[in-house]
Amino acid sequence: MKQPPFSTAQETENAFYDALEKADLEAMMTVWAEDDEIVCVHPGGMRLTGVEQVREAWRQIFNGGAVLRIKLRQLQTIDGKTLTVHSVYEQISIDGGTEQPPPMIATNIYQHADNGWRMVVHHASPAPSRLETESRRGKLLH
Image (tube, rainbow, N blue to C red; front, top):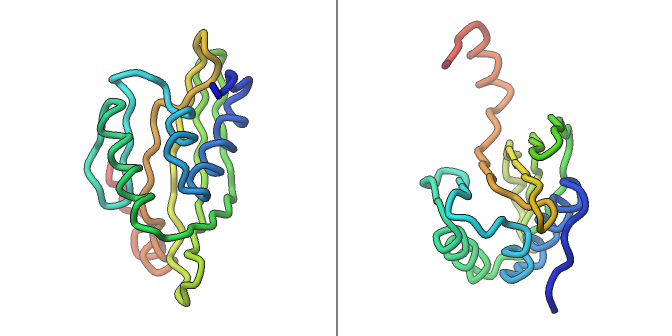
């Protein structure tokens, strides 16, 4: 059954995190634009471009067998007519795990086209700890 177009960037984001929690590769790929310019960067990973690299990375993650639970907080959005940027904190937990991993900061970019809203960029990295944040005050990287 073909996925109907997502009518909003938020609907697309909801489907992205739902597919991630369910480890559903086909649902995950319906979220992404079918474009060789899509970009995905997993925490500590290389930049992946194009549908094939993105699909393969998600396939490997899902085949790892971990059941993930994701809680989002501090959503910041930049909305445009055809492009929307979401910045969120992802608190990811692994079912059956005893440790609470540090949160991730993710930037998700969605583009509107004839087939509705689709993800074109997902970039996640570990959030700095409070101590790291305090020691970096006043130091700019860019």
